[in-house]
Image: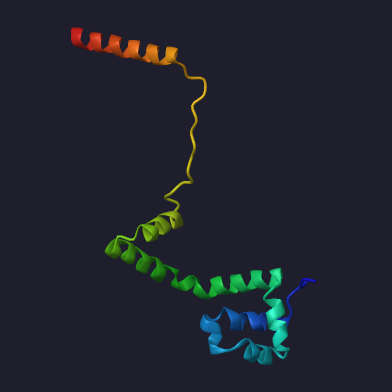
Length: 129
């Protein structure tokens, strides 16, 4: 059964778990800080609501470093010729679109012959002017 809402002990655990390397604490130590059994942390990590808030906290913790990270990524893409990094930078800046498939429908040899005839007429017109 999933969590219906997050309580104070959940939020405290999320704060610790969102720190780089969990603030140097083990799950057992985090559980002790939260006043719960260590199995609680393991169970919470399987909960959708808990994980959603954990991801939000991780984003809040790292947002201020995004410009620094993007600059390092750009430097790496240039210095190493890293195509994957370049692609990621372009995607992050909405400079790449998803692949678009185009299919031809209804075309015929008659259409191609008509195009060729038009081209020939244009060529004759341009040489006579």
